[in-house]
Amino acid sequence: MEPTRSRARSALALATLLGLAGATHFTRPKYYDAIVPRSLPGTPRQWTYVSGAAELAVAAAVATPRTRRLGAFAATALFVAVFPANVKMALDFRGKSPKARAIAYGRLPLQIPLVAWAWKVAKASP
Image (cartoon, rainbow, N blue to C red; front, side, top):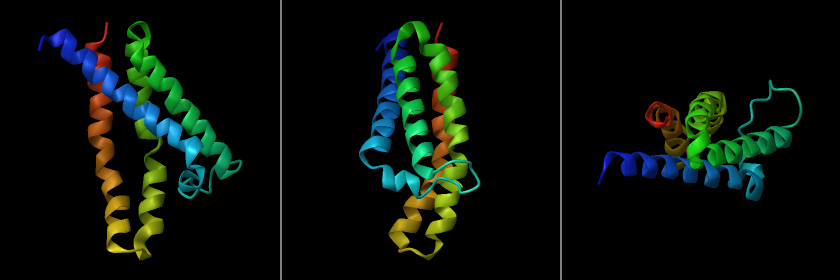
């Protein structure tokens, strides 16, 4: 596969991931409400919807070649910005089942390859 095509596929896969994640903020908001840090102003539902809309907007930007670079940099920032919610989830799940804890704790190191992926898409985009 040629490099340009591979880069485009990587960008579209990233956009798809962001789009699916963004959509779930609206289809299953209670899950996200529970991991919104309480120190944030407003209600958890407001943050759930704002973060879902942000993910959808970033997905659209990454999917569009003209805005891909900016969108991928925004995805990088978004993946860093949601890290506190993942930390809160890990802390909240300390008393849950081993499977639930594994999912919550697994989200923490997962942010590293997501940030790296988004950064790579940004750097590869004109």
